[in-house]
Length: 607
Picture 1 (cartoon, rainbow, N blue to C red):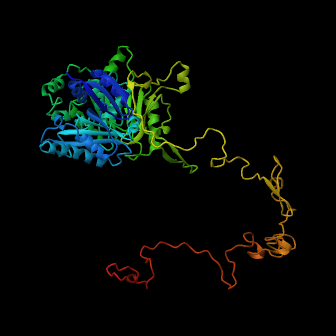
Picture 2 (cartoon, helix red, strand yellow):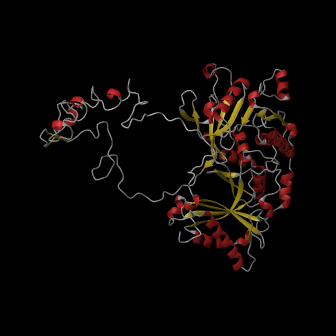
Picture 3 (spheres, rainbow, N blue to C red):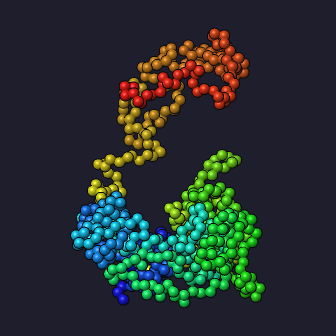
């Protein structure tokens, strides 16, 4: 069977997990990129990738790659493709795009030009032009444009690739969710977190804030090795009718009906939520997936948790004196973005309950990296902190992820009794590697080289001082105070000796012997505030005895100089006005105010 390149798209941070899944399915020449993994396989592997991959968003089959500098050149390159190999006459098409290019800043216009090129090709070959469908198109295409270093060297062009989308609707739409709650986590992200945490179905699992049950159902699918796409109504490749990629129904049916890889799940999965509505929604979704016997649900506030749940199999192992595997706790708590919550109080409670009630368990939590502002009620000071900062526990693993456009972190907490110093003193250590640690990756990593853009043609800075380059002076401790000259008493200017201190710096800031040179701005004999100057008070003092301008006996704000009760020249007494009470019926304007004289008449053009 013919082999070709296949590209699986995913979320940032899940590339390594996706590469391992592809290797398990039989993919070869696996290359990890940015939010994608490419590999080589045949049509059967293309079908299996859509059915089994848990961390893939779409599975693409590239059909053409070229370089273009503008939308017109894009049109010509797309029109040069033989579209009879991929689209049958009368079929509908839809075009998705991913564009990172300075040459194509209007992504919608790029799609229009691509659509026009395909339709014009059919018209020029005497065939009925395909229609563009908003949803459920017969053939869905993907246009990827990026500025790479290789393409930019070729006349500043961009790298373009057109692919057939074999998935149709995104693969995170599993098909088992009949009810949704507010701010649900993506199925692809939930599966990726479980696989990063090393979940394989060989222990109990508990989600205390289950919402619509995404973590619970994905965990059950992994534990029983059930295909992720088993509940979907269809895939994009099932509508391909022409060329070598035409849909093979017999091949697909054999893959879909094969249940030989399913395995027994002896442990159990527990879910709880404070919302009764959320638990009812989860129960409907679990029932639709046929996983009710593996999942137990309960309406319960996490703060009221008194002990960690245990399955009958774990209890049996302990009764027989065998060591039972540690419970895995996994949760997506609210972090004040899409669901309102008092972040500091809530996360302190989470940390306290984890420390007291789940000793010996492994807790994996995902939360936002964005800081929240917290006000100290005692001092009134405001500080910023991440939600995780309020848990008060030391994480062993920190991984960056993105949940619905929000930058998040996935953290692991190994819960033990006592302090961390005592835990380490007993010879224990935290496990600081996830299931997909990049240091142990055996796959090839390749990321597109971005173009450098316009190069700087000016003089480069070589680390040495240069007199011919305008540069902002560097401020030092003495900058702005040292002078290369000094002013003599007679007003003449004299250059200061090299290395000598400034003349201004040698003088004291309040030296009474210093007098202005030939200037008498205030007072008698040029003295602004001196003895014998009668401009302010007795003997030139602005606020002295028997020379006080305000209040009783010249005291502005002191004893026997209270403002209340003092009289002005007219004999009126100043009294503090009482606060005015709010009257809802009081008019904003006076009683004689005519509103009609102050309203613009837009119907009269002269006005």
